[in-house]
Image 1 (spheres, rainbow, N blue to C red):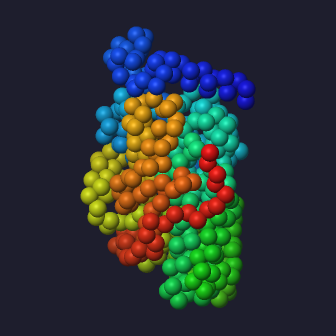
Image 2 (tube, protein in one colour; image 1 turned 90 degrees about the vertical axis):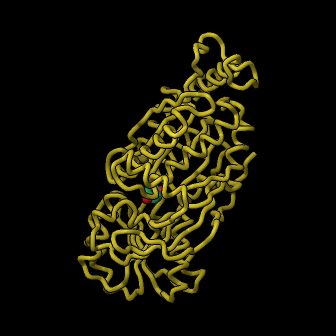
Image 3 (cartoon, rainbow, N blue to C red; image 1 turned 60 degrees about the horizontal axis):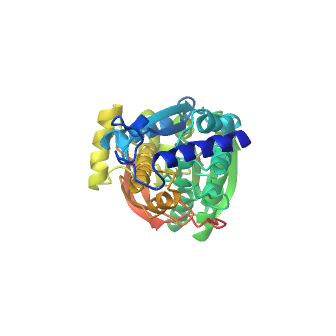
Length: 400
Ligand code: PHB
């Protein structure tokens, strides 16, 4: 730890002296060894899954981050962007060590992470200590922006509570009285199950069963075999990526009567592979197909050109993580050691996202609309709004 603190301080001291105290990063303020027309690069670490069940999620986040940086001419606040990518494989047991590699060995200035809530917790332990500016581009673990909130950590994706609570509430409003929830047994699944239950209860309905299997197992048959005898009006589920593709197909094949629903990850970036099995599934999420705001139209086109495939909610998370970073770094003209100004700009950000307008809450989680979607014609068609400008209710965050 001590060694790390020293290296952070050294980096900081270097930059401050190089900038002549609080001076902006202009050609005159840059010392001669950088001045050859070049400001020092802003090193941005991407710690994301590029293999395993969440690989496509990590790839889409990355494509969209690269897209925003390219739109900015490859530089923010006068500093060229240098990316350092690390495949975290969605393995929580390696997360802390991986985050330390980026922060201590590669000396990244900014860390953008990750998809898996358990891995994000490992990153969080490291960056709370080091003070590295961090933007969470997917993982929803509630506590990151509740009791464990930190000044240097922002989230542009969602809290696990936001879409899942909304789904439970929407179901109850539709007249569902009893529902079950199926998920992987790790932080994200547990928190989404609890939020789904809370939403159901808020609307006068009940969660009667919670069925789980280990992450990232896909041995769904023992669970599917139990569902027909449960006497529920609906089944909610949280799976994502490769696991979601398989679960939705097997659920359809099992011909279970209760309709399948859930937080919208179940049908995001997966519809082509799920095919007819996904038809009619209703989900709640902060994004959907057919949102025809100008930003989304341009985003979908540019993403398709870059990635050769359709954008999804994960691409939106990545794009907005980079948009938020740009707002901060541009506000301090590249001098990210001016933390007061950097964080103030990021906290006050009003972002034009492909999902609609978003802002940042007092605990530095995203505030956003939650849409109700239905799978029709191979799309997650937006059919309503469950909540406008929904903020995570989380308490326990005290930011100095
Ligand atoms: C999470 O682990 O927080 C997580 C992973 C994938 C998702 C959503 C949440 O699609």
